[in-house]
Length: 199
Length: 157
Image 1 (cartoon, chains in turn green, purple):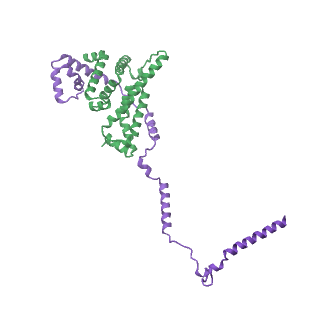
Image 2: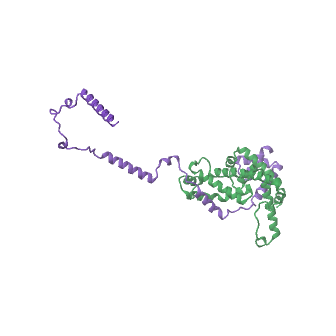
Image 3: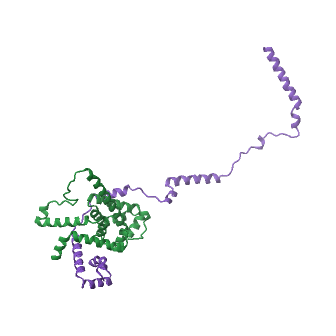
């Protein structure tokens, strides 16, 4: 039977390094994906994920299972991601004062390789890529805290109690935050939402 | 239930996170409110669209980099660890203690002088007071010495 997160963390506290590796394998993928969707840069997302795990490792001796492990983990991740997004925004503002405006063709999206090989129907592939790009842009346009709330709710499937602890707000404030986020997404994705309604 | 009160519960209804009582109340409202029913359908569509985003996999170097970072972390010692001596210090301290105990257990050995080696002075034959010259004689003898040295000096001159 698989050990719970809390048990693994208590074992790490007792000096069992192998348990830390198990926690790492259990959460590296969800954490990297969450951070990637927050900062929109794979390399930066992995750096931040490493920072999250190192902070967990450093805190092992003082660990007390007072909350769910995922709440603690994603709280560290969210704080780091929000700081990173704000830092990046200031950096971009500084650069834009000096550098000529350039258009980032992919907007940090993953490059697609061998399109013709993988997708015999290129037209269909392009439609799919356009849809994905629209969805990504809609998420990116959300204010950071709303974005974090949507990602934790939708992709990590955390409950309202956990998310409100991570974002340090009340449950009713969180529900309101999520409602506003979904309203924005509904408007931004209106053409796709309409298509979905017809199908 | 008014539409305003519905707002914070629509998403919970869409993902099935509402309690039974809240869900029934919501369905009752939806059966009479087309606007809220439309909103529910649109939120469902948004939810489905969000599922279309692909997941990314950690890079091959992620685990190696992570292991290297963990290995580079200094071993954390608690405050009590300062009180735990290293094996070398423990060994040295034990040896010192043993040496101290051994020295403390040894019988005390004072030097023994054989009685026959000691000079025997018969107190009856030795009168300490009379053995010393009278003080008056001593000063006279000293002045005699001074005179002698003065005469020697004048002869030299």
